[in-house]
Length: 99
Image (cartoon, rainbow, N blue to C red; front, side, top):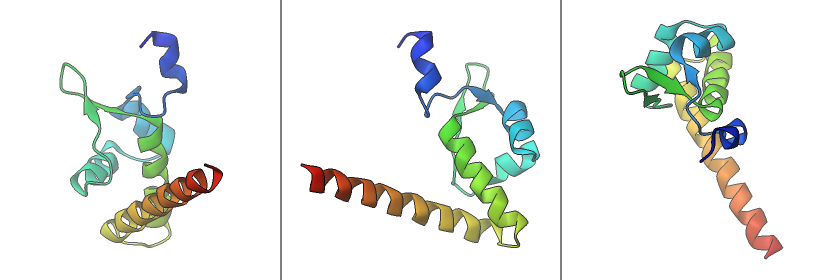
């Protein structure tokens, strides 16, 4: 994949933990807690540093939104997983209807 192809790839691990935390207005610890809760599993650089994709940052932003509104972290992660599964099922159904 050429470097320019990464610009449109939502799964490309482009963001360091520090940059991701800054973009989300949260702490690296919050991102680590999402990894521990198995909501997002960042890729690792050759040096072992966590790298996040835009897709993972969207999930983390949704988790922060839920946690900030008083939802427990584990419950927030479960809600997001279910939302993601529903969105995927709806996308598949739409594709089948168009075929």
